Image (cartoon, rainbow, N blue to C red; front, side, top):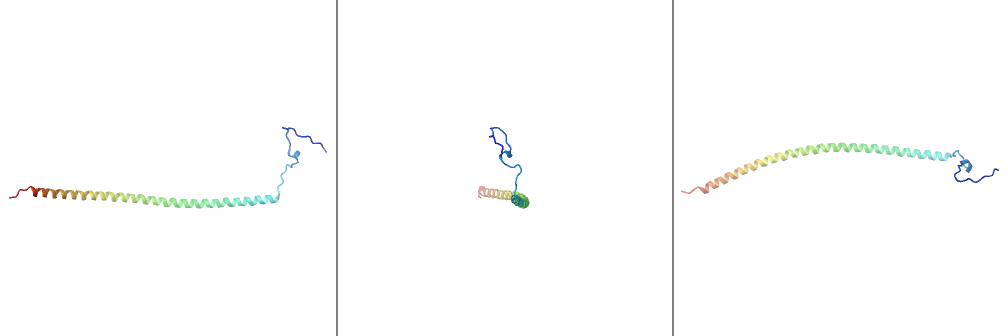
Length: 118
């Protein structure tokens, strides 16, 4: 039996010198477990892809609804603006009519009070 000499600090050694094999030993059980885990991961990834696709569909639906809503809001604002403008015009005409009636009434009342009585 050859005599082993102690390794000095900094000296390189090989795995064989320590009694380790350079070829990995993998049991069939470990391979089966790795395949099972890989299959589970593949299933989980596919499930996530399907979930993302459903979410994208929902987002597109919401975008369509918001687009329609924004068009409706724009139309409502335009209609409200037309009503406000029409109401302002009618209020202005009513105010002018009332102001002219008040001024005519005031002129009649001042003409009646100023006339001397004979």
